[in-house]
Image (cartoon, rainbow, N blue to C red):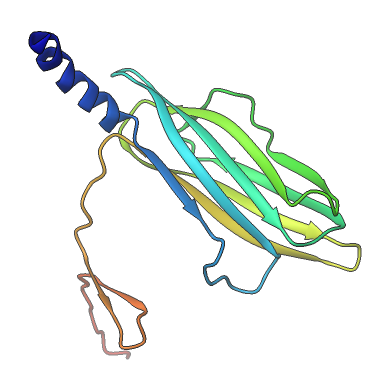
Length: 172
């Protein structure tokens, strides 16, 4: 029994590390004025091998608007390969009974890196339309450490400090 436990423990730990998922939401965070749409996502790998990694991506669009039409243009990073069929433009008819609108897809990547699925959403209520853009990250392989320094201002806002080279030329 102890031998089986010792043999299986490293495999289970590696499976747990490889099955890490990314989650995020815009609900409750500051947003520039635009369409009253929020987005939540979960991207999870379910097949990690050397040749290809498959990710389930579940995106949920949420809106407080109860009538009209919501559309979403979906743009998948060109280094990601769609496995399930993904329509480039999705349209949802808004109703008072429904608040959440799901978008589910599968993608794969052959190389490690950080990739994005971008959404450009729009609500059309007949009088006009408003837009809001989102990006859903897909992390393939191990996350790399950020090499730049992030500091906070007195108001709590993030400040990124990066190296830069400046050249000044005298205008003639």
